[in-house]
Structure formats: C-alpha cells, structure tokens
Amino acid sequence: MITEIVYFWSGREGADDHMRTLIAYSSTLGCTEQCASRLKADLGNGVEMFRISRRRRINLLDYDTIIIGGSIHEGTIQRSVRDFCENHLEVLLKKPVGLFVCCTDPEADENRLIEIAFPEELVEHALASGFFGGELNMKKMNLLQKIMTRKAARLQTEPEIDFQKILEFARTLQEA
Ligand SMILES: Cc1cc2nc3c(=O)[nH]c(=O)nc-3n(C[C@H](O)[C@H](O)[C@H](O)COP(=O)(O)O)c2cc1C
Image (cartoon, rainbow, N blue to C red; front, side, top):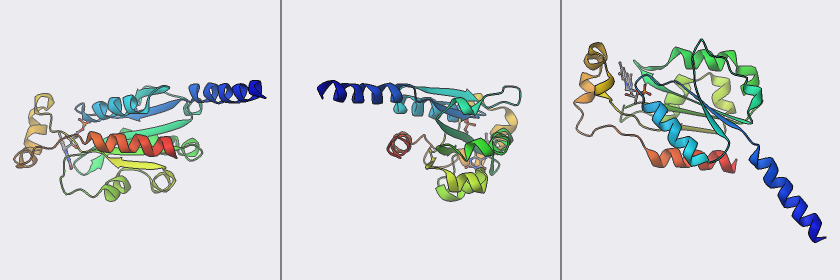
C-alpha cells in the first residue's frame, strides 16, 4: 500500500517535471523581453523563452503551454506577433494559452488591448491574459521613436512595469 502511494506521488512529480512552457514574445526596445524573463522566473522550472522572428521556426507541439506577448506601438502589436498567432492558430487552439501586452498608456483598458492585439478566437480560448504596463526606454530609442513618444514622455507619472500583474498572470496559469 505504502509503495503504491509513493509510486503514485513520484509518478506525478515526474509528469510535472517534464511539462514544458514556451514564452514567445517580440520586444522592440526590451521591455516585453524583461516582462517575459520575469514571468519565466515566476513560473519556475520547464519554461523557455523564444523571440519571435520571421527567420526562426519553432515546433509548438513540443510544448504543453504557450504564452505569447508583445508591445503596442502606434496603437497596434508587432506584426510578427500577429503573424505568429495566425500561422500557428490551429495548434494554439488545442493547448493552454496565455496572452500579454506591454504599453504605456495609463488609461489603457486591459480587455480592449488584448482584443486589439490578438486574433479573436485566441482571445476567447486563452486561460489568462494580462496587461503588464510598460516603459519608455529613451536610451534605446532612435530619433523618430523619441519624437513619436514625446507627448507620453511628458506624463507626470513615469510608466512602469507592473510586476504584481506578472505574478498574478503566472498564478492564474498555474492554477488553471
Ligand atoms: C514609437 C513608439 C510608439 C508607441 N506607441 C504606443 C501606443 O500607441 N500606445 C501605448 O500605450 N504605448 C505606445 N508606446 C509605448 C510602448 O508600448 C512601451 O514603450 C513598451 O514598454 C515597449 O515595449 P518593448 O520595449 O518591448 O517594445 C510606443 C513606444 C514607441 C517607442
């Protein structure tokens, strides 16, 4: 009996150890990458990060859970993130999925942001979705980007990453 119980628990642990999670993201100036790293740490073992790029391929079937994130520029998420979602939609709809965005608009509505950023079917399917705030990383911006974000940069409160939201997102996915 005792042997059976020990076997049962060790079997479960073994299964969890092999669970693999992918965080696929795009980051123009580094903020989303920072959020993805923090999320990886919050989720614990078995998590890999993948920077979305047209030149790099990945087999999503190798992963149990897939998280996709990007940032909002001129009102929309990176084209590469949308393409990634659309190209892999069939597989994504069969797996647990989490979606997140970064941006600096203090009045942004989380649900609206997610709806704008990702395909409707994927939004409906996702187990967790989150808006993690954002940063205006002036040091990494080129002149055009500085001009485009001049108004936002004058805001009284400096935008920042919401680390609590990242932790809550991780917990939601783990408990789902
Ligand atoms: C050129 C440019 C345009 C942006 N447009 C928006 C926007 O339309 N709405 C918004 O809330 N934030 C906007 N932002 C802020 C970014 O979403 C924010 O800096 C985010 O943290 C960037 O993440 P990343 O470094 O991963 O690309 C813009 C930033 C830049 C540089």
